Length: 282
Image 1 (cartoon, rainbow, N blue to C red):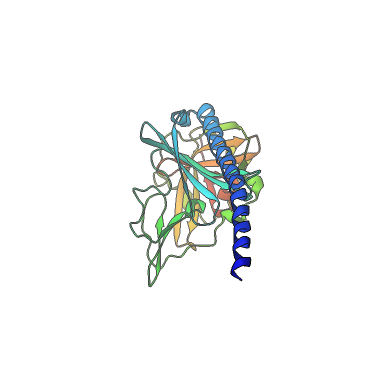
Image 2 (tube, rainbow, N blue to C red; image 1 turned 90 degrees about the vertical axis):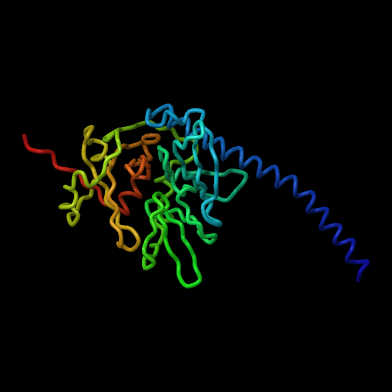
């Protein structure tokens, strides 16, 4: 038995040693494509939208979001100053031909899942789901949610809804190789949605604002996006600041939330409601 086992073990080890260089080469190729795509998106934004100018020649740091999610947070810094972030996903788990998509991106010093706001518990897991992104803090008796942008701790009774990003069509997300072909700035500076509360009276109306209607809004137009979160236990209002169009096809909405954060229009339309303030009659 022993004499037969040792040669077999040697053969298996030989196959493992032969496979290791191939796997290492595939991982190296995947990493090169991943970081090259990040730089492509960063350069595209920095050169075509002046709000992203600080992204030029900025440094990046990558961390994985959640186990087995194929999602990554890219932190962007310039001279040790936080200037923005990307959230990148991968459609297919293949080293040979990876296809990356842009889930979200933002400009400013406050990013998603910032270590400064992270819960101190070891069992805090980052969960990305657009506006509902959170840390899930698991304790022996219960779980608690912590807002991924602000660090706000929600009551223990709050529970996460089913992730909405998982149901988005790939046609809604900017894939590899796309260019930023259109930009609109509606509100250039940070705005508080409670400064103008006309949207409150529209909450129970059917406001199906299409992308062409959004794009046609004039500069300084007051547009608010309201999003019910965590089984409608929270209503989050955001002022729409900017609009982006990639390859004249992929639409993203930038809202003010401690900096500008851009999400796919189809996602914003699905989870929230746009409210356009009526212009005063002359």
